[in-house]
Length: 396
Image 1 (cartoon, rainbow, N blue to C red):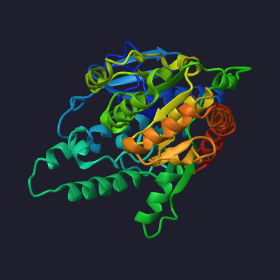
Image 2: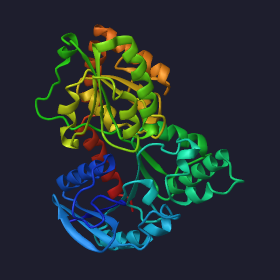
Image 3: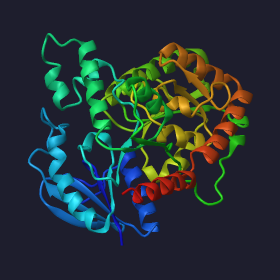
Image 4: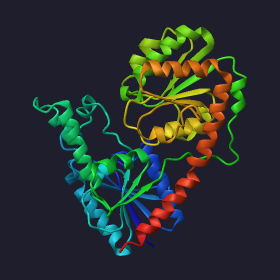
């Protein structure tokens, strides 16, 4: 049987004892399930504190001891992934199998023909102050006083192009990336690009209760993201404070997740009786979202076709999203949600409209569900991936 080796920095924990919760990890898991259905053996290869080899839900996961696998100045240097690449090639070559870089950051330059790199959206649209703190060489570069924010962004962008050009087959999760890339290159006929938006896994016979929007005493608003400023925590808090002053006891607001802004959120909203902090497991996402009427995804940057937005749409929430990255591929403004500039004022106005207009909320929720059902379902994602895999498998 053919093999497919998927390289990523952490699918399981560094000791291989438990799965890591996250969007890309879920993506890898579903991709492995698809490969198994196609009678291709999936192997996930990752750096680790010490060598390990485990079986996780029918997926072979190999951890390779890597002295460079720590947060240092060169953690995003492609040379750190060379030993994993060399190991992967030894595994896939005998069966003419597939090599998949699960994110462009872990890719290396290769002439192996049956290789795919996955682009999860443009995340380098982050403000320069964030780029200076994400680790890797950019933290070091940002310390030089003669390198200003504009130059740092240019350096980051040019390096991303170099990483993208490492391979000839690229799967991207949104059209925002591919359109940006077209503006950066004079000619690129040698590479194959495939756009496969992210997905929601709908249970059998699943349908959300859209009627809840017409039978609501209190409007329940959800922010289900990691608590980072670039995910919109600060503008969400400011919008909610203004909404509280406008609506009084008409709303409840739940922040679901965790992150460095948690104390800030609690401090700013703790005096409001309708404020809650919560968490949920990934597999419970749809059931959790179904308890809410409105979901906000007000990211400032770094978005593909967001799983959080897709899940909120699938659950029949009326959604507000910022016009950042791949979010603009999911929402048609004033049809299946509000698409706004990532500011506290625009977010407040959109939330206010949805809070006070039952009919708008009801119409948006129904259309959001239909959009997710037909545009972002797992089966569509699987079929598109199958076509890509078959094409790449036949490359000589």
